[in-house]
Amino acid sequence: MKETIYITGHKNPDSDSICAALAYAEYKNANGDINAIPVRLGEMNRETKFILEYFGVDAPMLIETVRLSVEDLNFDKIAPVSPDISLRMALDLMKKNNLNSLPIIDENEQLAGIVTISDIIQSYIDVWDNTILGKSSTSIDNIIDTLSAKSILIPNIMKPITGKLLVLAMEPKSVVEYIEENDIVICGDRKDAQELAINKDISLMIVTGDVKVDEEIISLAEEKGITIISTPHDTFTTSRLITQSVPLSYVMTTDNLVVFTLDDLVDNVKEQMSQTRFRSYPVIDDNNNNKVVGLISRYHLISSMKKKVILVDHNERSQSVDGLEECEILEIIDHHRVADVFTGNPIYFRNEPVGSTSTIIASILFENGRRPSKKMAGVLAAAIISDTLLFRSPTSTNVDKMILERLARIADLDVEKFAMEMFKAGTSLVGKTPQELLSQDFKAFTIDEDKIGIAQVYTMDPDSLEDMKLDLISLMEERAKEYKYSIFILMLTDIFEQASEMVVVGHNKELVAKAFGKTLDNNSFYAPGILSRKKQVVPPITNTLTNVQEL
Image (cartoon, rainbow, N blue to C red; front, side, top):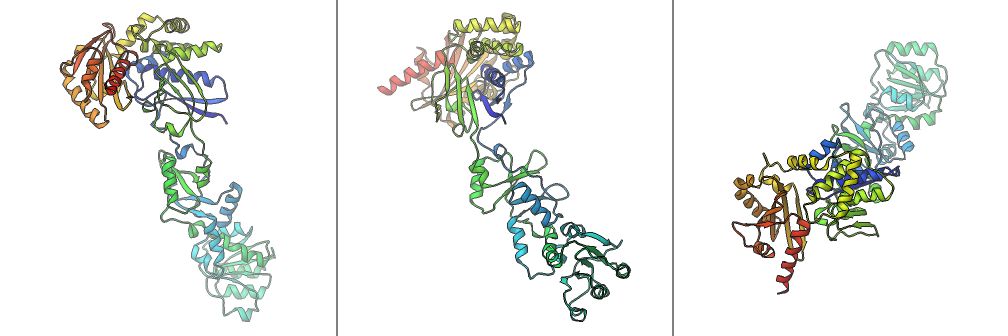
């Protein structure tokens, strides 16, 4: 079975984050020994959607966490059973599948209960209850199957099997006082005992030793609607086996069931299990009409394996997927500053000062003699164009240009024409709300004791945001207070003017303006030449905050 590895970019993903994950997954899967799954941690922006639609590439799967869920565990995938089946059949199924429990469903295929080895043993321990067959409403089919019997006579209208169970081992004149109407009797080949039992209006006669039943007895039983079956077992074995014909409905547990779903997190499952003493718990798929899919026990929690992940375009915990601390990080491919992601073992960590993570991914392919598919070459090229703003960003390098030229040839891409189409599609702000603008490309940074949030919006028409500026500032102040950001910045970046309007809130907002030699005017200032959040905004703010703290 192939090992599954999740390849993920950062939260609030941009084009580079999505495209890098897609391309690296394709590269990893080509090796054939792993199952690499590209995933995303949020909704894609308009630019990224345009890129994937343009090249005909499916979007990565959306996930919210990489914490282990029940679905990730190798729990017992056992088909549920009907409450009508016998204890004997249930025991055979448990032995065959090495189980201690079985889930039981009703006629609507919904969970009805659960039966355990303990439930079945308890029914055997109660050896004094000779009315168990009647109490349990067992069927003649269960009795025949359990005793490996064959039918001698089954009337059209059967008498109900509601009486007590008797073994006719005494003389007829002695047993007569014990037999009552609708009893079940086990007997041998004594015709006088058989005739006596039938005349007492029993419901079922079980003849042991596969002996032949006299035609007169059969005719008499037929007149009275009494069922006769014959088993190859001896009387002792028959009397021991017959209670195994009791249906599961009689012994199964139906009250106070603890049930888990495939989506339940393992941490929550552990907590619930610690408060109960059941050996196994039913698992249902609540996305498929609550279908019962198996059983889970404490053993499955102990033997669970951590999920494996590869991080691209980030190495900061606050930007990464929830539950990262519970995973095994295998690799990090990034072009940002080295931050605070910790690993338990040495890993492959590739960090280069280039304009795009996709540049690094493409380099890895070419270094290993691999050529990306035409579609994936286009996706990588688009991500480089996006992250470097077609080389207008100061983070751009000659390596980015060289890699883009090579990818463009493979993808047969007119870079200038495509860039204009992509930026036009991606920077359209028509219909955007303040909430969407602050979330579509947002990153959080921690500088010493200060938490800083920076959202960036690229546009070819920054004046179109003037009417909602007050709403944006109000929402930014709310989020700064809610998430305890000492600084919250919105960069309104004009790609072709190569400048940004910096909208700032927070109790340290004046320090941001100071870092750029500016003063705030209505919570904002104009910053010519400022395009890169990573290279032109975070470093001067870091220096300013550090100097203030030292003073």
